[in-house]
Length: 443
Picture (spheres, rainbow, N blue to C red):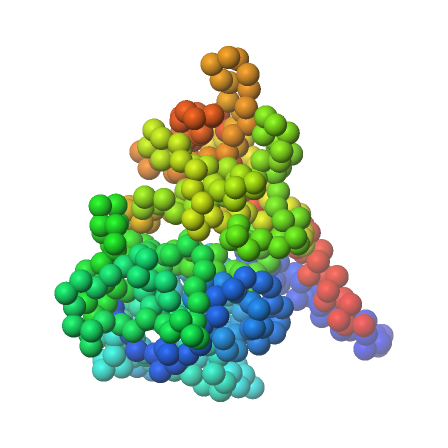
């Protein structure tokens, strides 16, 4: 009998686990919240994903300054009070986070001290604490709220997301006409809270609009009627972007949208023109901005900190709430690759396209960044950035995208020859990286 040294045996076990886990590697309402009056610090910055603390200079939308879940890993238990139907809704809520963010909900194991427990309690629609409180923390849901979007909402609280409709600046976006002040959800205090970033009517952290004790009424009711779960079935685009920033997500979740008014020198160096320049030779950078019930991708003008977008048949230069696309660590990093792909009939899988815009007027609609070379009336060619959406009718006919809406000079064009921003993971790179890390840890 041959006896192997302990290290050889350990490496052999790693190789076995590598083989077994190959597929896993490559595929990998009103509510009450007892901490709902906590301090929210929405500023921009980066934190280590392995850290529990949110630094005081971190900023993103509407978050609680408290402990987060290290590496975005949340252990969970399911209470015996859940029915098979409840468990199905919980799994769908988990999948929303797993697909759109780097958050991972993993089953509790002996020795796990910090975890959440999902439990049915018909005394509440939803109830939980904000952030990682330590030990066991219970997420209640019940009554008519035993469904995916309620669970997504409460899980959002446990991840440090607060209610969107209680932002400090909400009076710029919603109001409560004729409502008894005692029934209106309390806004944050200007002395201890601030808010930045695009106001997200579609957030799962926003109550439904149309009621005094819920999300109030959009100020611009000509273009926006609905809010929260009435606009999107799961996490909104801005929900996902916010979580990915807060938890410093990597892979194809590592792009960041930054406010143009607070861009640092480091963030400016993370902007990417993909090798394209405007006619005057300046780099062509993507941006997005809320305008008339949509969040629209467009072309960034640094000198004025504005975003030029197309809406309908008109061109608009918007300066309020402009966000610029950045790529910390570059377009290719740790097996994730961002690139522009030419759109032909079925050449680009929409699951790899990076969403950039959304609609606050239409149910669950997203738009994407489009780059194209357009020939002008004088035969000159110009590179332009604009939006393209998935055309549902065309999608049924085998074409995944509709025509792109482009701004050329002061004219709006519809074009069908363009490239979209995509991100993909190099599976061979991921396997090699996993094997290398496992081997190094065994020595």
